[in-house]
Amino acid sequence: MSIWQTVCEKDVLIADTGVCALVGDEQVAIFLSGFDDALYAINNFDPIGKANVLSRGIIGSIDDKVVVASPLYKQHFCLTSGQCIEQEDIFVSTYEIRIDGNQIQVALGA
Image 1: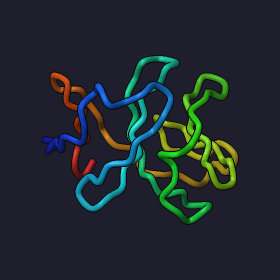
Image 2: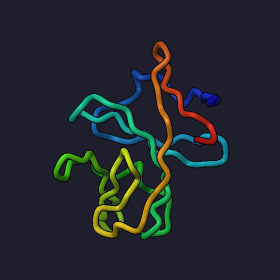
Image 3: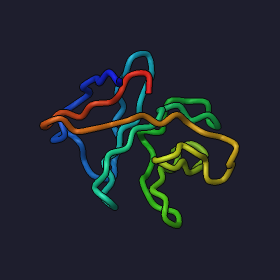
Image 4: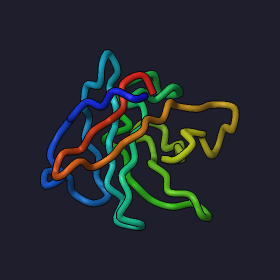
C-alpha cells in the first residue's frame, strides 16, 4: 500500500513545464504533459550532468515516448520508464503520481 504525499494543487501546473517537489528525502520533477494530458514524476537528479535539474528540462516526444531533455547535456529521459534514450543503461527513478480532487500527490517510497 502506497503512502501519498500532497505536493501541490493541479492549478499551479503549466502544461509541458516541470516543477520540483521534495517527496520524502528525494527531489522529484513533476510534469503535466500537453501531449497526452498525463502527469509524470521522475527523480530530479540528472545522473549524467550530476545536478538536480530535470524539472527545468524541455518536454517532447521521441517515437512514441514522452521525454524530458536535460537542460545540461540534452540527454532525453523517458517519463514513463526513466530510461535515458541516448544511453540506454542509465535510468532515473520514476514515481507513482495521481490527482486527488485538485491535489497532486506522489507516492512515498515508490
